[in-house]
Length: 183
Image (tube, rainbow, N blue to C red; front, side, top):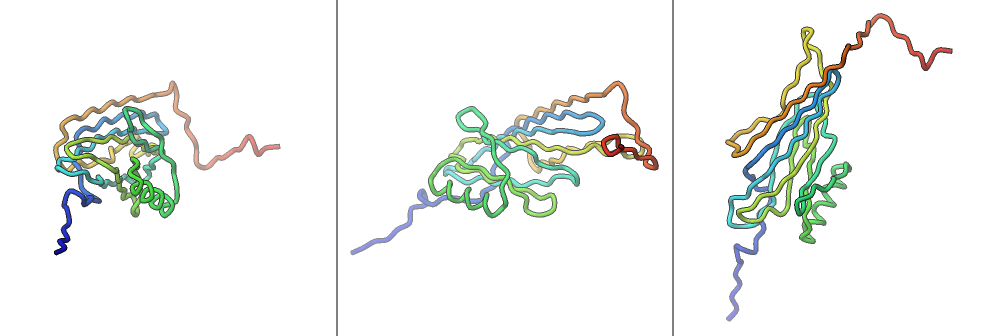
C-alpha cells in the first residue's frame, strides 16, 4: 500500500494580509519639499509562516525615494529596479529562503509591499521614504499624509518638523532670467 498525503504545515502561504502593528511617521517640510519617513511593523497572527502583503496608495505628486527592510535589528537598503527584474530577484531569493522584501508600483499611485518570511506569531519591519513638492493652494502650502489605515494600530507615532526660511523666494511667471545662460 502507498499513501500520499499533503501536510498543511509544509504549504507556504503567499500574499497574506498582515496586521499593521506599529507605525512611526516622521515628516520634515519646508516651503518647497516634504519628506516623509514611514516605519511599519507587520504582525502575522497565523500559526504558520507567511509571505506578508500590504497595499496602499500615495497621493498625486508623491514619490517613493527609499525602501529598507530590517534584518537582525538593522535596516538594509533596497534598490530601484524595473518591475520584472525586481519580481524575478524577489522570487529567486524566496526560493533560497533568504529574507527579501519588494515594494512595487501596481498602477497609478497604487503600491504593494511583499515581505518574506513573516514567521508565525511574529513581526517584520520595513521603512520607506516619500518625497513630494509642496503645492500652494489659495496662498497656503498643503500636505496630505498618504496613508489610510483600515484597522486599529497598537502603536502610532507622528513627528512633524517644519523648517521655515527667513524669506521665501517669489517668482514672477512673466519674467524669466537665466544667469547661467546669459553671455
